[in-house]
Amino acid sequence: MTIKRSARITALMALPAAFTLALATPVLAHDGQSGSQGQHGRDYRVDLRQLNDSGASGTALLSLQGRQLTVKINAQGLVPGQPHAQHIHGSTSGHNFHCPDTSADKNGDGVVTTTEGLPAYGDINISLTTRGDTSKVSGLAVDRMPVADRNGNVSYSRTITVSQAVADNITNLHVVQHGIDPNGNGKYDFGKGKSELDPKLPQEATAPASCGMLHSSTGSAPMSHG
Ligand SMILES: [Cu+2]
Image 1 (cartoon, rainbow, N blue to C red):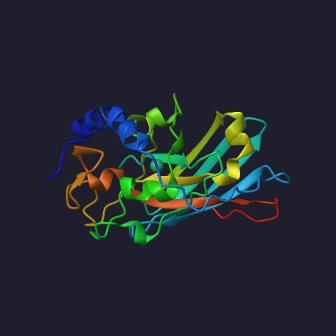
Image 2: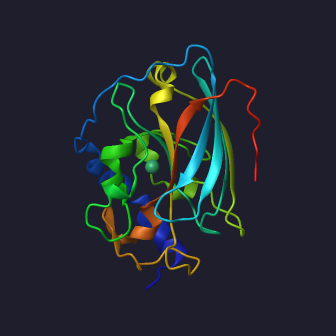
């Protein structure tokens, strides 16, 4: 079963309330080691690695000047022509969140859903929208999320004013892109069932496609953009 794009977007736009509810569920703390904050560098590189066998990959470069955070993402292997919700996840209060692995797939259906991934990668801290609000309320505002081109590439650049807490704890955060197509039919459908966030949505539209943690970039590492 497929749904028309307009219907899907309408449904997704109605979602933030439900999504926020889901996110309000307390997340499990991991062995809470505080990450040391990067005092020697303000540029960070993120290697985005696939989740859910999405085939997605990419590189994000985060550059912090005071509270001005510039995020540049070049990603490949995403579902062509489809919006891809993307966020900076994690906590600024010392929780050691990280990208999930397949062990997060609690029900063993082969997909780590957003809900299953949350204990690992934490709440949405920043929604990497193309315009407007960047809070977690905009987490699934797919009308303001980047759409992959016909080859499945996403190129994104935006400068966002972040909180001092984010600026101080940026290395505890990580980048997640959502939207997968496991049956390879080129669109989000219900092949993997309904989204746990909203039964009107396909799981494919909200499941994570890639995740990457921040690494300090000392400026000498060459960036390769696909
Ligand atoms: Cu996310």
